Image (cartoon, rainbow, N blue to C red):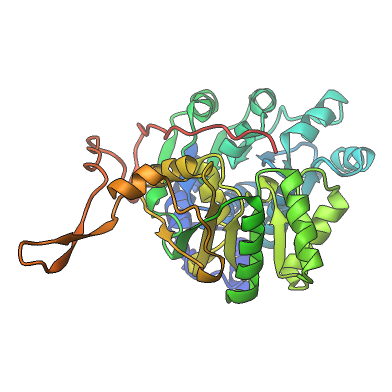
Length: 442
């Protein structure tokens, strides 16, 4: 129960009204040290309740009687406007019985309207780095009295090229007393540098290793001959799988537009979401998806972070994501909050090596699936099939009596694990981030 935490009664009232009963693992581990004022670096899977884990301690710190607002007291940085908007809603829900006011600054919205909001000086400012820098340059934003800085999805912000913006914004918050960094992955060298620069004697919390993420989500691959074959597979899956809502991810805007056109022609109720869509179209797509007016969304990775849609139970990777972390974030859209989900990746010859590297990264092996009506000629690398060296492949072998028996062959010896490697929940100060590729722009 949330009353186990030393939270203000007004926050507990909001929590009870919102029917939050049992804290999630990340909330149980992060809220107490955050309430004590410690800097935190928290890595937890998508959909694990990270937002409440930093919002509740933040509100608890700022809570008090009504008084004139003369300074911004907390700043929450996020990578996308959709995630920022969702976070604002969460902050407003939890603060409904307090006098705390919040504001939102993101791209795609009226600059002058945002400047007018900033003159009213909200207690909590939520925003994306690019637009915050623009308001800062225009003289509309002062962060010198910020007490708490939150970096949510910090690895994604670095992937999107916001490293310099983050450095400048954290520098503007030089008087801060607490910094909280949350992410779904451990990131790479860039994130390590950020942690070293902005966190002071942090507590590191790692909940669920990458290999344990989305354990209730079935992960499958289906081989395909080319993009046209993939399009037919998508149409078959949407027509024959049982699902409430589905997202289909592509790596490029052009492919997203092409697939969207095919689905519309096939009378599928579908929306499209990518970086070239304006804010109005993006908001409409997400709202219609959440409300159930549309069951299918075609998207690039702009939707891979921060999109929380109830009932989303199928993800199709039309294109294999460019890194293990991006794969985690894509399939993290389904199987949320303990629910079950299905993640299907369509694999051409030029996807196979990338798929194999993601399997190694996750220390998992995806289920191989064949749709008999649409079985193609490509079934994986020829040398792999000939040698039977795929991990876990079962091969028929004849014994001396002529009877056949099944022998399970292993691809390679298991990698030796380093001493003290994190397993399950870890609270330590010496985590080594996993390596990954930086995704190219959409």
